[in-house]
Image (cartoon, rainbow over all chains, first blue to last red; front, side, top):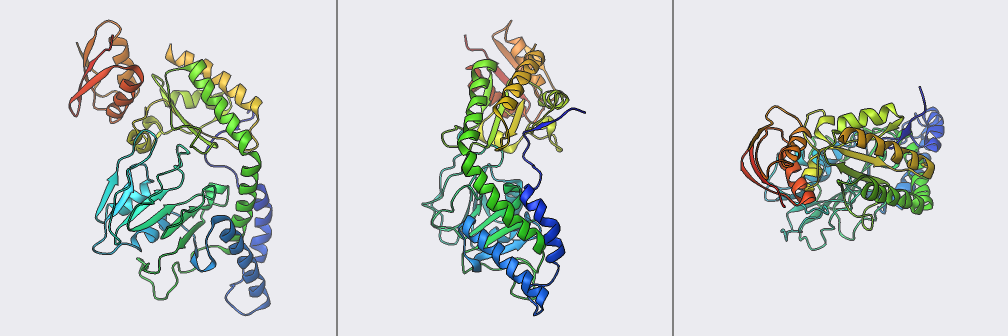
Length: 346
Length: 65
């Protein structure tokens, strides 16, 4: 089998974190809350990791909670701020987890325009609105609900600073090539009430793995540094692909504008192209990409993000660009893509 | 003309629609694929053609000349 160039969302654990993880599992087994030599060492490591998260995510020590199940953070972060007289406002391009939480409470879906932005409702101080700092499919930053009167839940990214006003925020360590199974939930609102039945005051009853927390912090530090170092190169690659699609391929619907979107994500849809066929052919040619088209989804439904933005849902290709992608790789990919599309459209 | 694409999945209804519009200027498209409505919306924006949704499975499409 030949080599594969990967432009997919999921990436291997950051090598620096992977290198440390074996060591972390060896050293990080003790309970950090107990008074033993081993426990104290772990407590120290955990504290250092917390410092990294606080610094890079813009949160305070007392706000931070680690989750072994990142998706649970949507329920904890949203439902914990909802009371019987609250309404939840959320974006039509939010993740399905938000829709799932919303289905159980009084809620309103905010439609988005073709740039992925919603009109911020006024709300009351009891209400909650969701803000997605970056859409995971398109790389487009969400609308900052500055004028909203109520609370704000953020599906956050380490690449976008938190706004001045927020109530709870959730990060998934996978978004910075950290380990699977690690969420960070920060709670700023003093009125937050645990929606889970617990017998003590902890937000999560120790559901997380300490070695993963430490490895996640290492991955985060490296990811942010590398992103900053290589942002202009990644932006140039993204721009190159966009230009090629428009000038060399045509009949293409590209999500968002590179001026406002983050450059490491790119989503485009090709008119009259069957995404399943294209993805298979690209795979055979040694390129791995993602797709939001219905034929590629488990439930055969088109991407709700593309549909909500009014973008073409068939022939969709999603690419994730990383610092280690080269211009040569992108050039070769574009040439293969053009040939395949010509063949498929014929 | 009427173009019955029921039972077909995306992007076939849109491909067949575009082919039909080469020879005729208005088409009644029948399609039960969940991607047809969002895709017709995007396709109309991209190509300048227009359509009206009659019911869940019926769309009247007019070619822009």
